[in-house]
Each structure stands twice: as structure tokens, then as C-alpha cells.
Length: 307
Image (cartoon, rainbow, N blue to C red; front, side, top):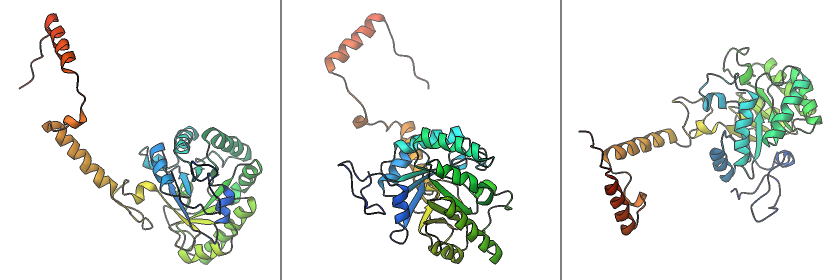
């Protein structure tokens, strides 16, 4: 269970630890404390991330690639998101859990965004949803916020639109594109977003956008000038793939450690050294003798082992 001080001056409401963070806490963190955000896709990883003191947990549609082995995020369904979000919420006590709205669950109009957003918010227990882009989805953002569903924005490289962007490329390197990104950030803020992810944006641009917004920015490949940072948990732990994007720092090599552990386990099983006596359960001598006598009475003989 997390015991670190939340971004706001909030204090524990019970002996069980600090209260869950809210959008108000996240907003108040701007200019006071940098926000640490990581992905989690299941109960176990959520417990680890939450217990280690992360402020926000993102149940990203990146689960399609990381957990389901797909080539992109586009095929992730709302039902799949609900399944993973419920598990993450069950494993979280303090961090604010945010869920990606999957591709084509909000782009098709306000009504669809409200129905799908409400289902994701209500049925999973997450505390906010995240939408990609601005412009055409601003009405959806406003409608969700008006309905009482907090929204986190996402600008720069937006994976759901990676095809039209020509691949995974840094966004905002030209002055015109940087200004457009700033205008979109302002529009999302005015539409009611409580925070904003900036992905693969030049660090100086992200810093200037951050300085001109009232809501916190959370960067991924956008430099240290943002109000917080987010990484995919499996990337930073060295669990997913041999190659990582430039903006990823690997804090561990858990894939290597896990592989060594599995290989050692398989070796010990095959040579018969696992399980050892300390891993097994015994039986009273008298009871075992009675069991063997019963087997002999039935004429049950041991099956011959192979050569």
C-alpha cells in the first residue's frame, strides 16, 4: 500500500493509508510536484505500481500489443478494456486510474462517446478516461466532462492515428505544427480536460506549452519540462521487446531475470532437485502404513517406470 505524500496536502482518511487521488489533486500538483504515471494492465502490476508510489496509473490501449501480442492498438475493444480496467482498479488504493477509450469508441460522435465513456467509467471503476486528439473530438470531450466523467487529453504522437501521421514520428518540429499543437492544447483545456499527455514532442516545445497551460502536462518523449512523466511499465522494466523507443529508460531487466529463473526451475524439475523436502507435506507414519496396507489389500501394484 502506498504511503508517499500525494501531490496535494491530502492526509489519510483512515488507518488503511492515504485516500485515492482525485482530479483536483492532479490539478493542484502543477508547479508543486512532478507527477509519476505508469501503465498497468492487471491486478498484480497495479498493486506494484500503486504500492511503489505512482500518482496515476494508465490502463492504456497499448495492452493490445503488450498483453495480447497484436501489432497495434487499433483492434482493442471496449470489452477488453473493461476486463483489464476492472483488474487494475481492484489492485489500486491510492493512484488515480485512467483508462484509454479505444479506437472508434468516441470518434463517431458525441452520443457514442457518452455511451462508451459512461460504460467504461461506471462498469470498471476508473476515475477518468483518456481521448486522443483535439479538433473533431472537442465536442465529445465537453460532453463527457459535462456528464461528470473526467477527461485526460493526448496530443503529439497519437497512436490511434499513427497511420495518417506516417508512422511513429516526432510531432511539432516545424513552427506551424508546434503552434497548432499549442492551440489544440488550449482547446482541450478549455473543453474541460484536467490534464494532458504530450507524446513525442520536442522538449523545448513541450516546455513552452506546459508553461502556458493551467492544467498539468504529462510527457512521454517530451522532455523534462512537462509537469509529469509516463512510461509503459513493461518497457521500463525490460519486459517487452529487445528494442525500446529513445525516450524509454530501462530501470531493470526483468525479462532476463525471469528467463534465468524459468530455466533454473525447468532444470531442477528435470534433475529431480525440485521440489525438496522443505517444499512438500508429510503424513503421520501410522496413517501412511494404513494407506499402504489398504493398497496391498486391493492388489494395487506400482506402475513400472520407463527406462
